[in-house]
Length: 371
Image (cartoon, rainbow, N blue to C red; front, top):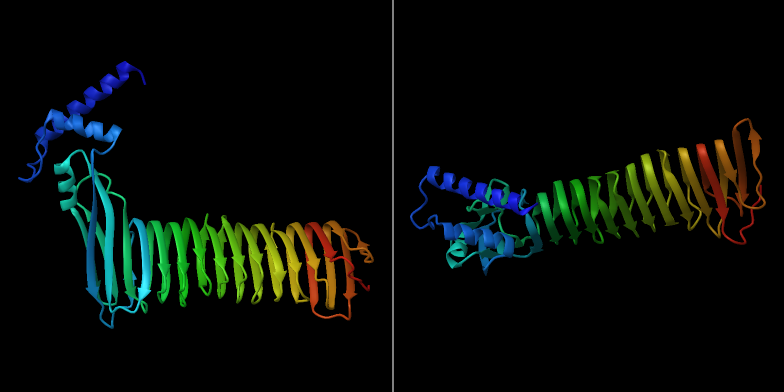
């Protein structure tokens, strides 16, 4: 932008502010009046930064009756830290820093900043208000609640939740960290980065989410795009993929994958594995012989068999390429190739079927195979 255009912009801004000040309703008696010098100060504050900054804290409490079961944080924006405790009420502390062009400006903003905790029936709610027009300041909420309560969360921001009964997400967007929650974690996650600690039980719809679960008790996901990392689950894992990228390392229960599109890496599989999907790239490594059924259309599947223990192998592909370990041979009928083998003394059935794509079966070094 040239000097001429910048000058015209400033003139239009001055004229606009002048028209607003003439036509606007009367301001409160304690509100600062209009002056050209003040407008210049406001412009300077916008481009240069706040001249005065003051830390502000607000607190609010609510006595919790036995009928209250849920704390609804609604679409509160900001950083939230929620902890379940043995207290019998809800305590909320808001911390922020208010900036302005002078002490009077900061005092006016501080006067308009409000925090309230209210209850209606089984639901308690937290509300943050900012009376001054424009963008509210950034803030943090530190919340202590009875550990028996469920926490409900929506909107966009950053949230860390510990030690409550359960969590429900209402299309939450932002950063999320959940741990020490024994009850279910339900709802919708959108465009988020989420981490779940040991023992969590998830039943979630996710879209464009980077999700990581460390030693979860159970995982049920319906994931559209995004990434899913599940590490050392202690219970079952069930994922319906819609072009998600999945990485599952270690199993503590059966794994069930369905849907369409994406990729999945499975390591140290020690429990039954079932995959039925279209256009899903699969790489699975079995740690021990377990019942395995993999059926994939239009993609590539690679399976590594365990180093020890017996199993029955059935591998087949139609309209594609089949690669087998040394010592195994396939029979070909038209566009179909198939092989079956007994490893060791036999055992669980590992059945892999691919329709249009590629299939590779590996055995760990030194593993003998008997056709």
